[in-house]
Length: 198
Length: 227
Image: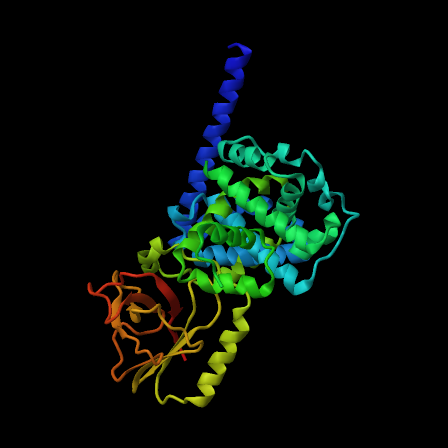
């Protein structure tokens, strides 16, 4: 097998494993919807590290992140029957639930700033951060479209999604007026949608 | 105001998914979700399309007792009954955490001001996957009363119709169209109404569903509990 064939093989295998995982997450959620606690436990085994990481990045406190994870899984348990293919990919559905539970927790508790923790730092501000997104098909479109945005627009949208920062927190972080941040995000979303739909 | 212009609607949906909206705007979006399918689609679009950004976050090991805590919680909270799968195409939505206190307060008030003699049931209806109490149903020997807590009104030329879903049955049964006053009274207790069954309100043509089954979106649901 020459180098090109080998790399193509790797890419295909990667896509295969991703497809399998996506469909199995969907199948698990459907089983959870029918009341299977075993399926929920399996879902937890597969997804809890990823989801806890997302919660921790937003709330920045392990005890609160653990509460968020717990709330999210109770919600997954209660709402799994309502999950349908129409709601799109299972992983994104799960992420959405955890992010909103985490954002609620931030509003309730306020945000701890633990900048001395290296795992919770400002890595997202690195200029080449979007290069780190996996080059899977869906991510490819997002990465390509994000790159078309102005730096400020791109940075604000990534900050909001990954760290769960509000308009005013972003303004503080990037040291810009609130009005500018709002308009960067709005114009960024508008361009992003046009690009993603084209 | 939820914009009608598709571009503004998508921008608002994107801001909602990013989580940058202030509390007022966010609750307005959350409230509109139950009845605005375009908004739901726009939010799903952003949740799906922005999802790769979550790969920028490193996974982390949750505390070892996290699963046990979840297990303890779910053994008390049954999943929504499979009968609800009937409504699967409704793109049901997440809840806002704000509603628990409101539900408790509404219930407590109701129970204090309207003592119902004999065995009785109560249900609090809320928009799918939100916790904001929107309707309270009480049932006893004297029948069933369903009353709005929020003054919710159907879109013009439409009506709210109330349905009961017995977990043992596959199809909802209509309990009638809710009058514009926001209060529906039945003098007999429908057999479908018992502990564990589901009450739902859908949006139907004026006069009610022409098919004996819900034809429009389900905008409020709740589980019947012994009071």
